[in-house]
Length: 392
Image (cartoon, rainbow, N blue to C red; front, side, top):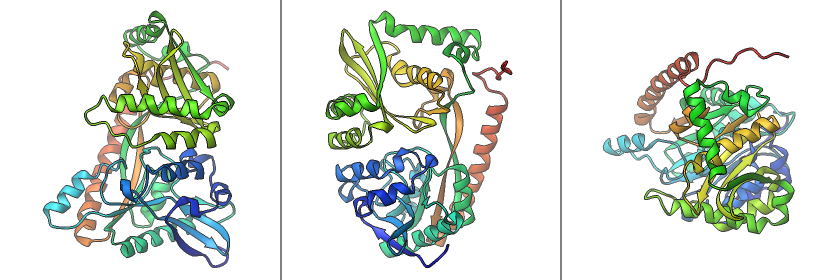
C-alpha cells in the first residue's frame, strides 16, 4: 500500500461517509454491502447491541481517504448469522473454554456470498486484506472476543483469508444457474420427462387458482416505497408468526429504508387473486444475480410458495439474461426444481490455542468431505440432464 494507513473501528456505519463507503463497492460486493443496506439494518434497530449485533466496522484510512473496509459485528451468540457453529460452541462449553463473544465480518441475517473486504481501486487488495485480518485479531483481543469469523466470502477471497491463517470452511447452498437459456421451455427440457411434467403441473396451479404473478422493481417501487415496504413487512411477518421457530429479525422501518433508498436493487414478486395481494417475495438484485430473501402469504394455495419464490423468478432471470438466482440458505426441495448445490465458504480463527488446533483440523477434514461430495454431484446430477451443445 502506498503511504501509511491507519485502522479505525466504527461503531455505526453512519459514522463512515456514504459516498466513500459506496465508492469501494463493486459488482462482486453485492448490494448487501452497500451503505444503504447496512445503515437500514442498524438505524432501524434490527442490527444493534440490543439485538445481539454490536457494530465495529473495520476501516483502513489514509488521512481522510477510505482505503479499505469490512462490515464487522461483535456477537454474544450465533442467532441470525448462519454460521452453523453451535456444535463448536457446545464443545467449547463442555471443555470449559469460553466461545462467545466472537467477532464476525459479515452482513447480519444475510447468508449471501460476496466480498467481505472492500478495497479502493488502485490499492493492493492482498495487502489491504492482510491488514484487515491482522486488525481483526487485534480488535477481537481488545473487545474480549475469542475468535474471528469471516462469513460467506467469495471463493477467491476465502483462499486469501486462509493464507492469512484463518481456516477455510466449505459448505453449500442451492443456486439456479443460467446456462444461456433462450426460453423457459429450453430450461425445462433439461429435466427427465417425469420431473418436467411434475414441474409443469406445479407451474400451472396459479392460473387455475385465479392468481397472477409479476415482478415489481425500480421506478414503480420508488413511486410508492412506503406502500411496498409495508406489504413486504406484513407478508414476511404473517409467515414468521405461523412458524414455531420463526424469527422476525427485520422490522417495518428496515423495509421502509431500503425501499426508499435503494429501489434499484429491490425486486418484489407479487401474487394477486381478484386484485388482492395474497403472497409476495422480497428479493435483492445485482446486475448479474438475483438473491431470494423473504416471502410470505396471506392465503394458502397449492404450490404457491414454489411459484412465488422459485419458478416466477427463474423465468424472469431467463428473460433478462441474469446469470444466477440464489434462493437463500437451505431447502433441499430446490434440487428437484432446477437448483444445484453451490459451494459456500467461511473462514475462522480462534484466539485460544485449545480451540484453534482441534477446530482447524476439523474444518480441514470437513472441507475435504464437502468438496468431494460436490464433485460427485456435479459429475452425475440426479435431476438435470447434462447440457447439450446449443446451436449458434
